[in-house]
Structures are given as structure tokens and as C-alpha cells.
Length: 191
Length: 191
Image (cartoon, rainbow over all chains, first blue to last red; front, side, top):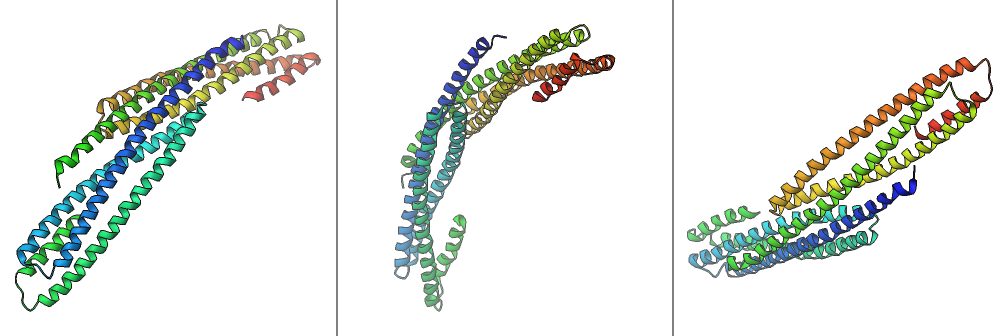
């Protein structure tokens, strides 16, 4: 059996596989870049929306004892709108988050396949890329978490102050009561 | 908050992701094609090598009681060479087998990512491709298994006949004994 002859096509098969594995790493890197961009951008938009709500909430809390029923209702409508916006942006970033997780998994598999196919450079390239985007994403996540923390603090403050307000006003009764009964419902929607 | 304005970049992000996911399916399909070609080709080469060994084994068995020690040793050398060749080709196809498994896994993930990104056609394309190559590979595997079955039968037949031969010759003793003691060692190497 002519061993040399038999192994020539094997070598060429090997180089074709190596090339195909490199192509996979190229396309997964593009996919990973796009998914990272989408996730970071949507996290940033979400974070902005959270801060918008924090700021509205703080204004509401500051004015709670200075507004009449109509003013309170008006600012509450704005807060509800900002909450809806924040929820939409949260859904959007969660969608891109799962897309990004998939992109990372595919990239890891592509790196492994490239390594096994002898395309070492392609493998190292993908692994570095994965590390880079993981850092980027975790930074964006931290900013979003920080914003969520501020929102929780602002809400706690508002509840504390509106309970105090309630106590002060309770002998009078009347319209503020109605508004305060609407609030918990609006909170329950999101939390 | 101008909702329409805010969602325009989202749409374009979505289409970029969809396109990137389609590119991943393209490259994984190329990789899967190459890996399938390599696996089927190496399985076929291995199957041929098994049949070569079957044929040599059968010749050896047919001539076992008609050869002198030198003739037996000569044909045995050829059998050992064919076994080495078969083992090499088995290692080669096992290597391509794990490459192919990886290619199938990556393709499945790419199909899922394409589906999630809304690239339905790309997803269906990959899934059909996976089914097709799974059929191709299982056909090649069956042929290899069939060959291995024939080899096992030929080896059993040879052992049976050489034991009978051994019994017939035992009163004489001498050189055939040595060759028969070499055989089990050669078998142990592969089995």
C-alpha cells in the first residue's frame, strides 16, 4: 500500500478544514461584535431610562407636600410613562442579553473547533475577543445595577415620605387618599 | 420621550444582528460540509483497509495448512502491514469524527441563533443541512461496521483453523509452533 500517496489527500482535507474553521471564527467574531454592541447600547438606554425615573421620583417626593391633587396626578402620569419606557427598554436589553450569551457560546465552540483544526491564531483571536467583550458587558451591567440601586432608594424615600404625609393629612381625609391608593398599583406593575 | 425616534436604531441593530447570524450559519455550513467530506472519505478509506485485511486473512486461512514456515512468515508480514495501515486510518477517521461532531454542534447553535435573530430561512437551511449530513455519515458508518463484522468473522475462522492445524501438527512440533506463538501478540496490538 503506497502510504505517501494515501496521505496526500488527507493533508489537503486538513487544510480545508482548518480554513473552514477559521471562517467560522471570523463570522462568530462579527456576530459577537454586533451582539455586544446591541447589548451595551440597550443596557445604556435602559440605564438612562432608570435615571430619568429616579429624577422624576425625587422631584415627586420633594413636592409631595406642596402639590394639590391635580398637580400630583399630572406628575404621576409622567412617572407612569417613564416606568413604561423603562420596562420596554429592560425587555429590549434582556432580549439582546440572551442573543449575546448565544454569541459567546458559539464563539467559544468556534475557538475550540479552530484549536482542534490547528487554526491556533484564529482560536487565540476569538478567545481574546470573548474576554474583551465580557469586560465591556460587565461594566455596562454594573452601571445599570447602580442605577437600579438609586431607583430603589428613591422609591423607598418616596414611600417613607408619602406615609408621613398620609399620617399628617389623615385627619382631613379626601382627595390625596385616592392618589395614594393608585400608587401601589402602579408600583406592582413593574416590581 | 419620543418613542419612534428611540426605536429606529433598535431596528437597525436588529437587522445587523440578523445579518451577522446569517453569516455564522453560512460559515458553519461550509465547515460542516468540509467536516462531513473528511469524515465520509476517511471512513471509506478505513473500510477499504478493513476489507484488504479481510481478504489477506482469508487467503492466509485458506493456505494455513499448505505453507511452509517461510511462506507463512511472509504472508504474516503483509497482514501485519495491513493491520498497521488499518489502525492509522482508524485513528484518522476518529479524529475527523470528533471534528464532525463539533461541526454539528456549532451548526445547531448557529441555527438556534439565526432563529432567535429572526433569520428563519438561514435557520431552516442549516437544520436541513444537518439532517442531510447525518444521513450521509450514518450510511458510511454502517458500511464500516459491516466491514468490521467481516473482519471479526475472518479472524475467528483463522483462529479456529489454526487451532485445528496446531492439534494436527502437535506430534511433530517444530517451526510452525513459533509462528503461531507470534500471532496472538500481533492480534493483541489492535483488539
